[in-house]
Length: 275
Image (cartoon, rainbow, N blue to C red; front, side):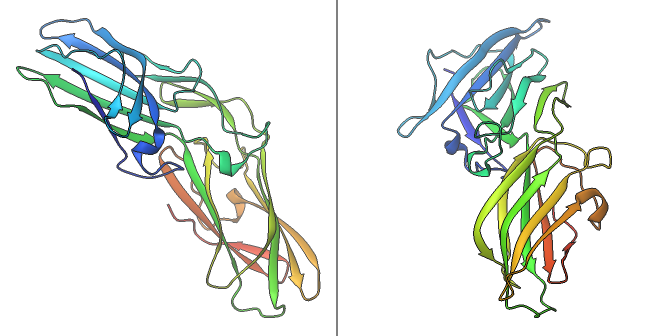
């Protein structure tokens, strides 16, 4: 019987352990020895995690000896009309990373993962097929610090940030993303977060479509903060493309962290992002 396992060699998103997926879909083909044509074995087969039995599916399928197999996995299993072709091309007709009625809510981000595993069966069949999942999206993070050289005010309190201008709807085919939308902003209203000099205020796991950060497709970072005890409110807007020491495009299965320093002279500074 063909059995499945799941693993995640790298963590680049909301899910950092394969069992957190709970369920995924599998496609698979086999080619008999000395044959030219592939026969489909699995077509969007749901595989689910059971605490006592591991990854299971019904009905079970047998191994055929002297066959070459190709297995493909996709998470989540709710991506409508998504599929693999016989040559292994993943097609996602429409992926909208926005949540909450069209606005982005980072706490509801959905990770998208894919896997591929070939398997050659000769005289004996393997115990299981271990699918190695990787992230399709880009994990974007921000860390905000207070300038340690300027003590004009006792506190800098961040009240909101906005990240805007990125593509949020796209389709994937032949390994390339095609975008359907370019005017998206992600809003975060904060419960008055006080900045520290050495401990950053973090905004983690903002899952984005892979895309180039260019002047033609600018991404803007807007932060609003208050000074205390003066009570002054300030809003600063910066484009990533023109204000970073080094520009980094957003790539699949990548985690990138932007480090921002807020100065009390009504300015913010981007440090070199870490990837």
